[in-house]
Image (cartoon, rainbow, N blue to C red; front, side, top):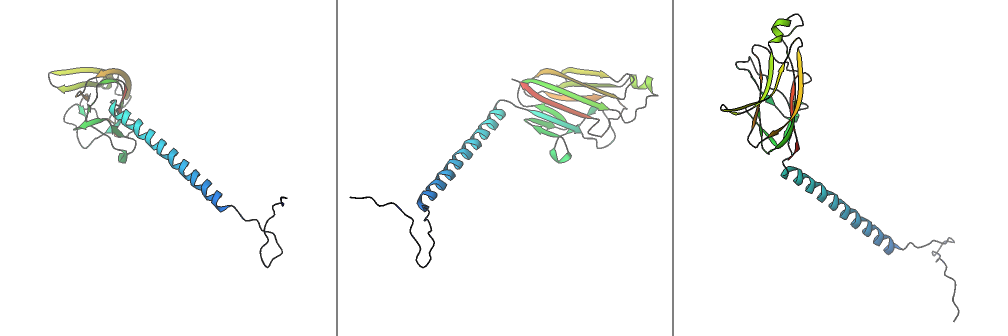
Length: 198
């Protein structure tokens, strides 16, 4: 038996040779590529979901707050707000309670704060020296702990940060000596907390 060489079939009515594509093979390859793409997509989504659940269950918490200044100050306490709709402020894994930040998960946190006075002038050196910004744990009147105490001295702005352990339920409050007014500009006055270790 002699083998004949394989040739392309000619279409009827034309003198051109047209090669027939193996459609079944092309469909199989396309299906396999789609299936592999779906498996990779499901794997990536599953990894992101697991990472998000791990962060939430581990006590991950972060907040960047801006001043909530709604009128004249009657007490030394500053009130804060956090919401992406306000600009660059947000709260995740923490709770704002009447403008004060409450810790939901125990751990070591990095606190940072900057306050700029609006009614301040470099010519008021003696008056500005008495201005003080304090950050503390003020969960209750009997349990108050100072974490930061900053004097303005001859400046109109103070800024600082520190690492500290905070327990679940601790409420952080910030106090500014009256009658000084903090700037409402979120670039000049802000307060933030970031969980760094359990």
